[in-house]
Image 1 (cartoon, helix red, strand yellow):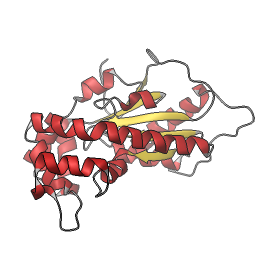
Image 2: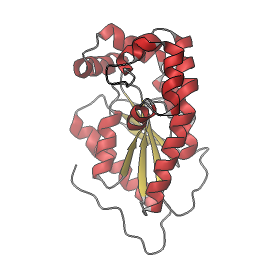
Image 3: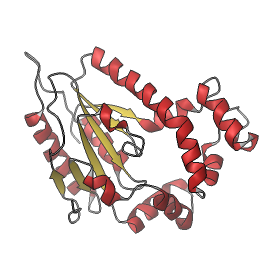
Image 4: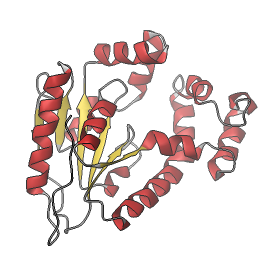
Length: 235
């Protein structure tokens, strides 16, 4: 599957099983700086419930969580901040410069995070939520796509993604590019996704494309008897 030119979207249902009526889950993924969070916020304003892996990622590192001690044992007390939480910036400096260390961290955290996310999705399902967005950079890497009904991916050229991330994070371009290179390529993500959104374009164009794809999703999503479409606000 080829990623198309700037700000295009592409839908492909190949390999996805029909979903019974009920809550529909979009798995939203993409590399750092690809515009994933921006698209997630647009979908939330359109009426979807947003569940962020970053939130779960913070929770899994909190003191008292099973993963906290395992991570500290693996990487040392130097990653512990003054308040007792794990300093993710210090930890990132270790794991993003060494693929083996990154695999070691992922082996500790990914399964625990997936179970936490599964519980959050079930809570949304119990509330009667119609569409949920599971936003996770590592959705495919960590095998979370089996929690979803379809996968959307945001893509942007590495230099664009790096510039966006460096501007907001304070990291150098070299540090950001190192993190991008440690992640799954956007070509590989695109090959495993149903919707591809290229965000290397004006924000308004991205908004139009997300709105168009949202309408298409509501048309193809199995409806429950008597339900009304998700409420939406202007984006």
